[in-house]
Length: 342
Ligand code: ADP
Image 1 (cartoon, rainbow, N blue to C red):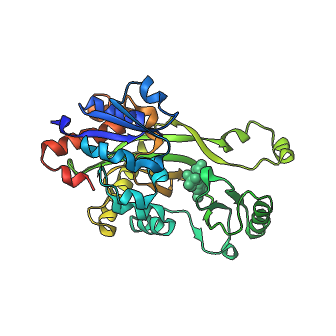
Image 2: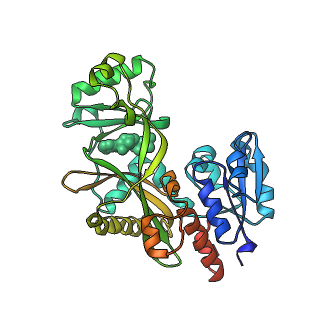
Image 3: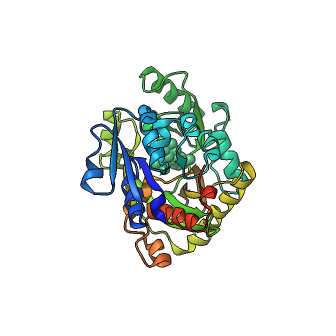
């Protein structure tokens, strides 16, 4: 049954577990790679076919073959970033997930509206620097790896640091930014999977990010930090697994369910498949959500062999990549495949 379709994804981000999971569920797999980036997909033997492109912008060249193979593209963070939303919307090949939700994820204002409607705790956002009345994090739009992001303890600090960022050329003056309350606590990334077939929102796993250079600044004495004038950056270079206090789970499960319910009010069919809520948990146990990723996140990569949570539920290795393939397989078996594609 699974062999009628092939599972394909771009060779990057979380492709190893997506392809491995698809093979475990009995599918043939395709990795579409940028020239020179093919080696992991050869070495770890997850791809039955590797298509090499000089650049991902030439994706159209691969599309005929993908259509011939009746491929289902599994989107991940790099897929959306490399292709751009418009190109993704115009794909002819099957796409797993709901394309309509992409606009809500990409626009920070829409994203916050959605999360607010889902009754999540959000960091306060300030429309203008004049409104700043507490410590904030300033995020520049389109800044790769959080380049130029800075913390400001109050309004004056904001203006001083903003000037400095612009003068030093770290960010351009025209670059738009958002000003968010800086929430003191621990970052926790919650990975969910909403199954259309089982009609349930499952917690898959949790991770912490390992970001350069913020996660290593603390290795340098504060005096040296100041003298060296180090600018914090937030480029993710890896992820580490996390298990949360069990008493946090009920609220976290409900948060995921509310986000899915609300998504049905904003776009037809709503959000389904993997998604992630990026949160900070404070010392009073408040879970503050500052972002949603409406697809598989790289934070699920430590769990190729499953997480403690998927082990509880499945009693077999179940990565998020495999869970996607399982959903597609069940959708095919139930003659409901069109419901999970767009
Ligand atoms: P990007 O959009 O580049 O992924 P994020 O919005 O994830 O950047 O933020 C980068 C870093 O800043 C993360 O380590 C995150 O934990 C931290 N962060 C983001 N927003 C807040 C916030 N409102 N309060 C505290 N920390 C935050």
